[in-house]
Length: 170
Image (tube, rainbow, N blue to C red):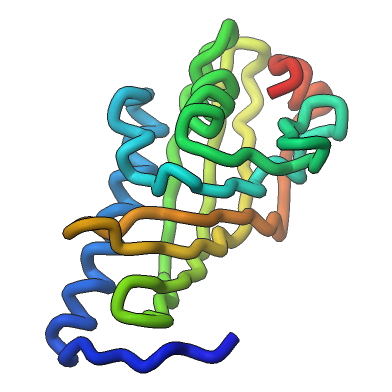
């Protein structure tokens, strides 16, 4: 994908990248703290999330018949809160590292983050670990950089049998 001409100065570009990093970090904190009232404001209204591919097919959310896809802040918040804060409460700790963020225009960007998430719940005493990369796109809306697209590529999953038994279809 060819980048559009960037007219921002170097300091403005660096500031944009820092703002994107802050939006991403705030999203992770909102998930771990279960701050579902704040979570939608970190995404564009038309956000697309394709981060559910690791779930069994019968539990994956879908949009218009497309599995592993959620569109919009309302459906996204509903799905992630159902996963982490549903009938079985999941304690989560998300870590993201070494972002590669590229501005693709003055108001758009894409990034890749190495990440790890650890999940615990009362259905067992085994610690679960999930490792992978978030691939995201961002768009500046007004004065704020927001997440407009996300996919998740898992590199490794250490999980117990029955790992997904705690959730229904999202």
